Length: 236
Image (tube, rainbow, N blue to C red; front, side):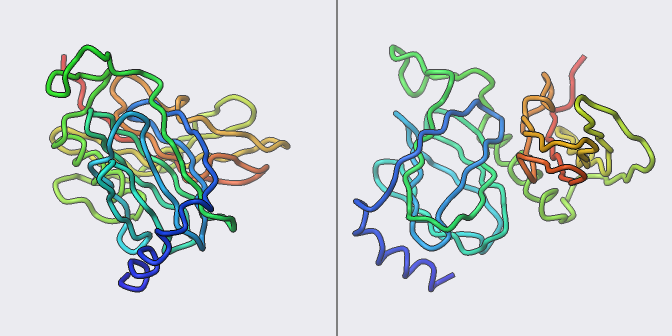
C-alpha cells in the first residue's frame, strides 16, 4: 500500500494525459466502471463532492482533493465494489474492473438533480440514505462480496430452489443474512441460453432494496455470476 500511495503522488502532475468518461447513476444502485490498471484515475461527481469511499482493503489507493474528487490507483486486477457517498447525500456503488489503458477521469452524473434553490442543509435527494444507514449498507455489501462473516447477522444457506427468468436466465438463492434493520441476499445467476446477456441491476431492485451489486455485468452462455442485495426490513 505505501508503494501505491507513493506512485499515486508522483503521477498527479500528469493530469493532461487523462481521457474523460461520463457515467450516469441512480441512488442506491450499482454501475460498472473500468479503470486503468497501470495509471492513476480521477473520480468526480458532477456539481458535488465525494466525502466517503468504502472498498476492500488493498484494492486501491486514493487521495482526496479539495474539489471533492478522488485520485485512484488500482492495486489489484480482481473486480471489486466501491461505495461512494457525496456531500449532498447521494449514495451509490460501482463495480470496478481493471483494464490496460491510459488513466481516465470518470464523471458521475446523478439522474435525479438536486433542486438548486435548496441549501445543502435542507437537501433531501430521492431515496436518500442517512449516513449511519449508508455505512451499514456498505459494510454488509462488502462483507457479502468478500464472503466475510458480518457481525450482528444470522446466516442461512439455501439449497435447491431455482427461479427461472427471461432469456434462459436462472436465479438460485444461496445465502441470506438477517439483521435488526437490514437483510442481505446472495444469489447465483446462470445463463442457460446460447447468447451473451447484459445484466441490469434494476431487474433485482424493488421498494425495500437499498443496494444491488453484480459480480459480472455481462454473462456468456453457460456462465455464472452472483447478485448481491441489501434490503431494509419492511415496516407494516
